[in-house]
Length: 126
Image (cartoon, rainbow, N blue to C red; front, side):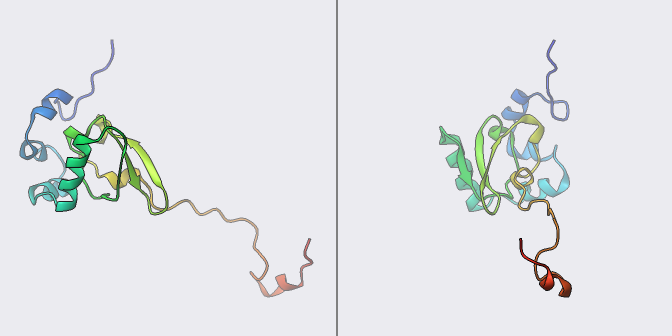
């Protein structure tokens, strides 16, 4: 038997039938505050384009809270340099889009290069 995913005891169908105000009461306070204050013009345009989109949609709107009507869609979120492909799942509800597209990479240091220290200028080049 497959496990049915729920969000705060509600199935996906129940969540999609809810209004935005009802859903906002179920999410953490920071995300609730941004939904209660209303969506920005940029976020409203993004939602309209997402509803009509047949293929993955590109967006810079990293501050958008993931709401139930977005579940199942594919989007490309800008990470500062490249586009990160994300498929929105039920576990992502209440999070922001930017959380799934990191803007920086882990710093990997290797051996010091030429000019790193005063003595390195006397090292022979290979």
